[in-house]
Picture (cartoon, chains in turn blue, brown):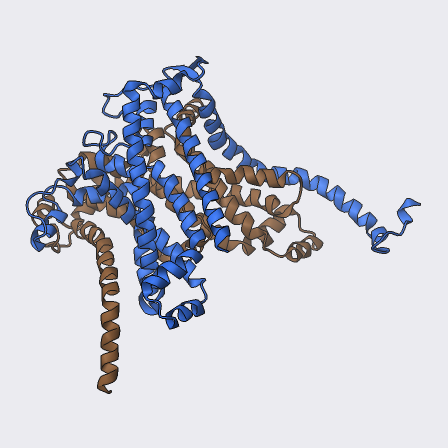
Amino acid sequence: MNNLTVRPGGGRYVARRPTEWASRLRKGKNGLISLAFMLPALAIYSTFLVYPMIRSLVGSFFSWQGIQISEFAGLANFWRVFSSSTAAAVGNAFTHNVIWFFCVLVGQNIMGLFFAYLIHRRRRFGRVLQWWFFLPAILSPVLVGSLWRLLLSPRGPIETILGAIGIHTGPITWLGQSDIALYILIGIDIWNWVGLPILVFVAGFGGIDPKIFEAARVDGAGSGRVLFAIATPILLPSVATLSVLAFINSFNQFDTMYVVEGLHGNPDGSTDVLVALFYRFAFGSAAGSGRTDIGVALALGTLLFLFVVLISTQMIRFFERRNARLQ
Amino acid sequence: MTTKTVKVSLLQFAKLLPANVVLTLWSVLIALPLYVLTVSCFKTTSEIYANPLGLPTSWGIANFVSSWSTAHFDRYTLNSLIVSVGSISLTLITGVLASYPLSRLHRWWTLPLTGYFLAGIMIPVRLGSVELFLLMKQLHLLDSYLGLILAYTAIRIPFAIYVISGFMRTVPVEFEDAARIDGAGHFRILWNVMVPQSRGAIAIVAVFTAIAVWNDFYFPLLFIFNDSLKTLPAIVATFTGQYRTDWGPLFAGMTISIIPMVALYAAMSRHIRAGVAAGGFR
């Protein structure tokens, strides 16, 4: 009887009833089958990424005997990170990561916006330039680092060029100078990656109505005004994404520094970064002079993990608020 | 041609000049290392030192021969190929399989599970590497291709699901229904309807996985102790430290290691642009 009740929506309800039932049956079967579809990805992702990550976070609260986990130690590992001998190294590496982030942040946004604007205005060469500027980004940081290390070595090509032009005579030892080496590494990193912001911003410029630019020009705005007063606010979502990415990448730096300056961040730790410090505590140094301390490594990892997650979510929030205010 | 138009175009040229100079300078700065890399492959080490910028005196391939066979770059290239192809295949298979239900079903668990996968895009994976190492050791996957392939697949699955399931959501349901009426099962629908419809997304995932895996050096550094199993970036890093006296073969080896990526870039730059637009570079 109930089946025949006419409801708002007319007879469709009744007519649909049997098919709906069948589809629910099918859905139940679908649930099992789709779980089976998901199983390989779920298994690999959970086993080799989520599980080790969680174990590392938990393990940072335990004491370790070599690579054997031993007993619950509370915050002992964290106190040891901030003990006098380690704290200096952590502070040193942290400072370098922060400098790295700010240089990349400023460099990639200014260079990216500027080059993207120029490329956007060039129909004929734009595509070629874009292709060329992005090329370094497909090369491995290790290869790029090795290449620049050879180029910058004493009696190497850069020295020859600068000598020939007359900018700099005598041997170049930048990679061995503790006040310059870090900035050389950051420069290499920017050379490697700046094609990405260029590509993103070119796509952004492509999405802006050309009439907006024309109107600004008619009003007498120069290229600089057009770029910074008009285009940048519109491109803010891209700036946001790229800045968060720059933050995460800066605090994950390892490859470039390892291959150019070695695991200890020569000269005298002046290019040391946090992931390298983490690696040395976890796996010992290749040179054999270091000792491993898994507890400290995991505590450092947990702190860095929390820091990266916290700051990047705060950055995303900040940009979202800015964006909302602009609209 | 009046003097006025000449003046205007001259003015235009003068206005564009600073911008063109900057563009040229950056182009040259990108070209310089790649130029030195290319010409040095054909020089002897003493020639590199004496004349780092000039063209080589002869275009002999002695350095390539020596790095390919004597320095075993044939072996390392093979290792890189196996690990890359393995990781790309496994990422695509698992990613496509998981994306289908995640994009099509609306059950209570689809949203949380999608979130669970996507969280992996932001996780700083290297910080879990101690426990990953211990896990690999327990499973006897150290010093094996499979260990690297599984680690890379786990890292790339979030991006694969993000891109492919996002794309599959836009495939019209009618296509699927039509196939279902014809009696096709889930696998048939996935293989004959969904996969061809999301070719673009699959290409993006393949290219970005290729770049990430081919270029990675952190996990080989961690998991591979046997030199004959090392991948190209790992060996380039080692040689840069050791081979400082014999640059010719090192440059040739570096060139060998980038040729596949440059070829891929030349062929697939459209997909790379699309992938960047999808937010996929990490």
